[in-house]
Length: 179
Image 1 (spheres, rainbow, N blue to C red):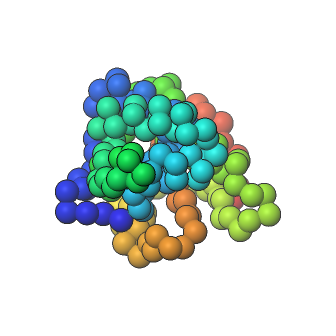
Image 2: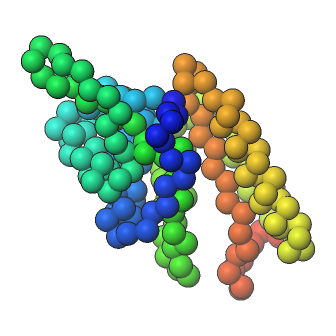
């Protein structure tokens, strides 16, 4: 649930920030915090971690500037902190030629961890596009993702949308257009 102080986009620029988002557990913690603030206890329960591990990972994300405390309350003499994402979206640097794409690795791990009997839509299509068509398709995919992000209701189950539009490396084998 965005607030007035939340940035629209957080650009990952330092090695510390990149290490923070590169970890699958921290990626899943950020997913918990995407729509609403949560305490360490709530995060631990939702991600399936011990509270100590959850606290450790949240502290690293906070130090990197990716999450922040948005409110506190006193419970039985202890200050309970509610954490939220620092921005609505995170922009990762280009991994460079041959570098691992952190976002895609996390997306595949989340897809593999999703219930096998759940509904999912996964597709790969090989296209031949002009530069203009490529740019238009990228803009349309981004606009569609933004449109549905605006419709998101925190009370509904989470849905992940991941897409990658890219030119394969020259000489990379494709399946000739299979869908």
